[in-house]
Image (tube, rainbow, N blue to C red):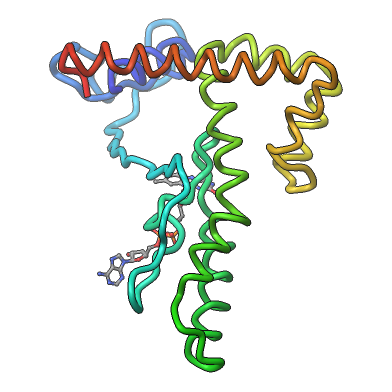
Length: 201
Ligand SMILES: Cc1cc2nc3c(=O)[nH]c(=O)nc-3n(C[C@H](O)[C@H](O)[C@H](O)COP(=O)(O)OP(=O)(O)OC[C@H]3O[C@@H](n4cnc5c(N)ncnc54)[C@H](O)[C@@H]3O)c2cc1C
């Protein structure tokens, strides 16, 4: 990932480099020849995997329940998890209240609520993710250039529409959209299995 990131910085030509002895990156403090911008002293880079759950599951066990990142409730398409952390937290609080005050027999209702209210949306985002990752530029250009697609996208970001509404937006092409998502998923899984065989995990 570091070499990809370095290429991006070079492409953007912002004049900063990652201190990486293996790739002979520009020294911090030197001046970038093209832009004349001084290379940043040190960029400290850290990465962290975003936990993404891609199928419905159980989120409680006995008197324990998991919410937010701990439950893998993040949007697979955007990597956003704050919204789902808050939503699952609210559901968790409600179920705990019922368990402690009202005397529900278990926290099963929490698992059901997460699967019904949050996972459907996240699974739809995951379907779209496969297609997006296969042709990211094309989809980016489509959303950028189509007024209708852009408005729909912004509505999803605002929480006024849902990923689940996306297939319906294609009208009579809905079947084609579903097929494209499915095919891109197969291609992804095929590529992933080849990567795994070669030792890239
Ligand atoms: C670099 C990065 C950028 C991101 N950008 C976005 C974004 O732009 N938009 C978005 O929506 N999401 C973003 N996310 C995802 C988002 O931050 C998480 O999905 C969200 O914060 C999850 O909330 P949470 O409450 O489940 O977990 P956290 O926010 O991780 O909270 C868990 C808390 O538990 C504490 N903790 C851990 N172990 C213990 C322990 N043993 N005892 C006591 N406390 C403990 C931790 O210190 C932490 O404060 C980003 C994530 C990363 C890593």
